[in-house]
Image 1 (tube, rainbow, N blue to C red):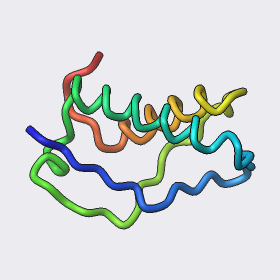
Image 2: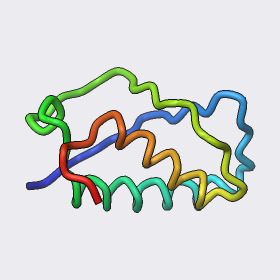
Image 3: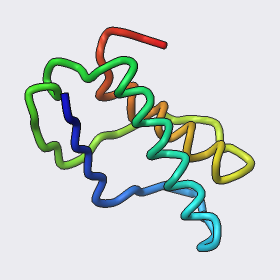
Image 4: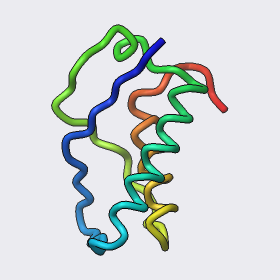
Length: 87
């Protein structure tokens, strides 16, 4: 199965990510979210293919570095779109 996920915009309310840290955050988010989707699949509503205008993730602890933050964001996003299987 091929999954194509496009995140048009990521809004982090109350958090200023320095411009130089954004690439590391993006790479960590993409890697973690890709691994979670590969291992756990998608919820049935998403598996058939759909577009959603927004997804509100639960509040989370702020990470100290962009890699940790990207990983935490991916975990929160996967919590909203993920399937039944877990790591």
